[in-house]
Length: 130
Image 1: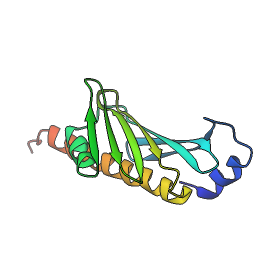
Image 2: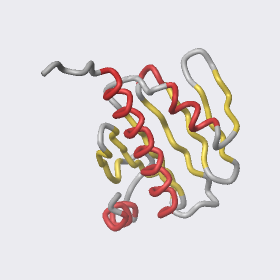
Image 3: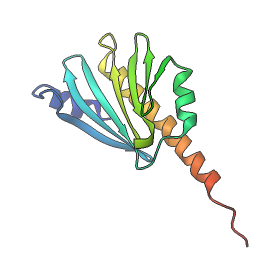
């Protein structure tokens, strides 16, 4: 994420305003202004999230599940609300974290998700004769 661009926009941004949009492979990250010390990150794909992604997240913090979504609480770091069938997640960093760390955390999650999506796609493609 372009931290400088986000920093320039944040000086006059209002709540929910888009600061930056980047694609990390098959994952689009939209960074929105939350407040002076925190941004919100939306991670979206065109396909459902793999179940391995839920397992990876669960290893990082406390998991609360509902029928259509789950929430991961990583103490002192962030809360991530995930709608896996919709291919959508919202990352809410904790105020104690700095903006650079927040962007890195969002990118790390997106990179991991993209890797898992690509592994799943490779497994789903049957070998070609020839």
